Amino acid sequence: MLTPAGERYEDAVREVLARIEAATLELVAGDGGVGSLRVSSLPTFAAKWLIPRLPQFQQQHPEVTLHFVPYVQGYDVGQPGLDCSILFGDGHWPGARAHYLAGNDVALIAPRTRVADWAIETPADVRRHTLLRHGTVPQAWARWGEAHGVDTAGWPAGPQFDQFQTLIRAVMAGMGLGLVPRCLVQDEIAAGLVREPLSAGGYRSDLGYWLCYPETRSRLQPLVCFRDWLLQPEAA
Image (tube, rainbow, N blue to C red; front, side, top):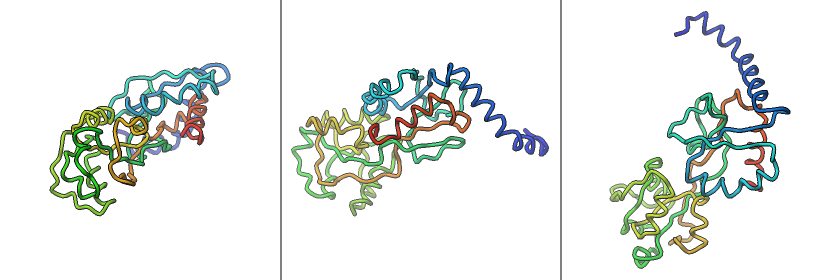
């Protein structure tokens, strides 16, 4: 534990140390400030949203090499072996800058078979079906009910999944209805693998996917290239 004098000293030198760390990282990255970038991302978002866009990034920035490190729930964005992370949440993580990417448009999806044979003509009809859940968003069905004027209190809870990809597969298999960020399921909707049973049946969430990194890495040139590319309209 720092003494009061130590805390004052830390406050005084923190900005200088951050600049030294940033300059060191740029030097290690390679000549001219380009080189490699160590990234972590939630697996479903990486597979469904990020990876299909990366050829464009490679074309625009061939000088930057991305290295994906294993994603662990609750990752510390400031750990030494990581430059940036793509996290799911409300955009607030201690010690991190965060830039919204996608995910707050949530779609209500249903399977093409079995459950799809049961009519869903109004939001209240949803109650007659099994409601699949995602462990990271336990209040999703309650938020959906608020958006559609339906009281979901007391509705039976269905199976819970730890990834949106497995939840999408469960809907495709006919296990029930799901709430999934549209950016992760739009291909399945377009291909007819799942359907949206209600017109405008989704809702706008406070949660989404964010690019996060510590302040000390904000000037790292590969990260600057990656961040600016992700935030341009063409990438989104």
